[in-house]
Length: 164
Image (tube, rainbow, N blue to C red; front, side, top):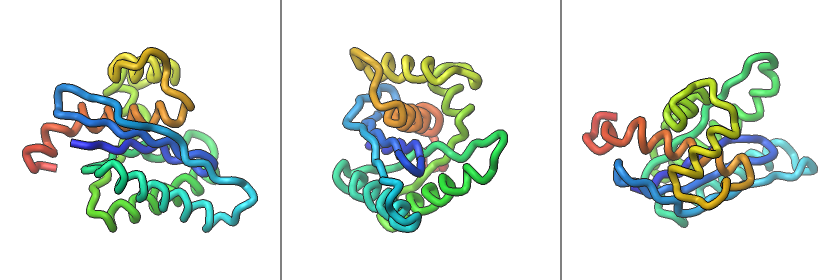
């Protein structure tokens, strides 16, 4: 199964592709989609979704694990990210690719065993679990790989049995 992980962001959206058989996970590729602040909001959101769709086609993605919105103080900062999430879900739905949303604490728990893990701890576990020599960079790409791993570990058996 080819899994696309997404760490949605307005200025930078991380993405990572992982191949998984439910027991073994292999990194395929990863990176970041950047949007310049000089572009109009709708253009930025559209370009992110379009790029996600192109990545899904290029790597023949079967399913997507995406980090969901999580905010503690300022809801207005979450609104642009929510728009990116919606646009990406729409783009992937057009391609018949299911999307599973996971809260950051869920991703942290699945990848590290602790929902309050620090960003560096998550990145280190991504490095170990995917066999990298060093931490995947940039940070948003490492977070996207963590979202893909979360799906591979958390939902793989349900998906294979057609339960989810």
